[in-house]
Amino acid sequence: MKRSIIPNRLRVGKKPVEESSGKSVERIQGNGFTWIDVQNPERWIIEDLAQEFNLNTLNIEDSLAKFELPKLDAYDDHFFLILHFPPLFSKISVPQVSQLSVFMGKNFLITIHQGDLTPLVEIVKTCKDAHDVQRREQLLGESSGALLHEIIDVLVDDMLHTLRRIMANLVEIEEGVFDERRSVARQISRLRKEITILRRISNPLKRLVLETGKQVERFIPRDDVELKLYFDDVIDHLDRIIESLEESKETMEIYKDTDFVLSTEKTNKVLAVLTMIFTLAIPATVIGTFYGMNIALPGGTGDVPTIFGTYSSFIIIILASVIPAGLMFAYFRRIGWMG
Image 1 (tube, rainbow, N blue to C red):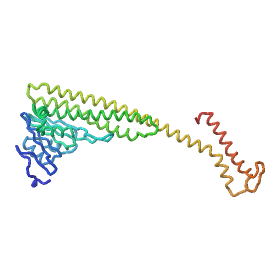
Image 2: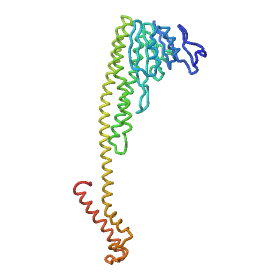
Image 3: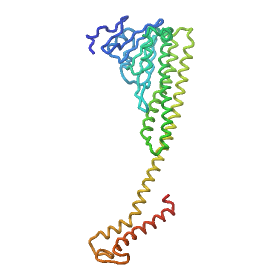
Image 4: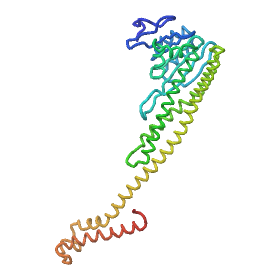
């Protein structure tokens, strides 16, 4: 989108940018601070914000990237934070990482994301809704640090919902592992990948939330001591998530090994049956091969035995095929290869 066609470009103290698809920037006034939420950011928008709030150029580049490693950079008047969260995804599907970039100072909070973090988008809608006064006051009535806690808290709670769905899928896979009529190998592989990605998100997230709680203390009123306890509560939730993911990982390894063992056993049974069928058919195959040749053989077309009448040759061939097969069957059954 060219800058020349933007009717309301973001400037200090001006209204948010409006695009054909709706607002991409929301500027919301809180109690002594301004919250600016940017979805699907464009470079010139972030550069204007950097000029307005004196933000670091390297942090601007990181916030524009769709994927950067989680980090926290602290400065005298603000700090920069990158967090990763899983977006809301469907049943047993592989999640993609969503990045949330945050600039926070005493009188401002800037959140930058791609718009796929549903809980955060809902918070923005709530703050714009003039009817839900109580919830709006809860979000904007304290400080920028309290609002940042609320954002992180709802995103972590969303991870708890995802974790509950994973546990439900584990139960479903457990039933499928011991059901010979179902194949769960693909489900196991996809859920293992999902758990791995969530573990990769959760461990750095805990460390950064802990550091964020310490940084926020620099920009909140001295009497707001409860905010640190709120961040500690988020850490407790993350501890639960990490612990549950570790247990889920171990459980998935057990299911994977069990499914492999049962599948191998089932394959061996099928191969054993096919091998037995082939082995029992060997006598008939040998006799049929010899008597299918165009040469004179005992009991062939040149001889007319009368032991069993007209079909004596046929009956002799059948007996010569069935009797060895029966003896082999009895022997295999006696040594335990069958049944």
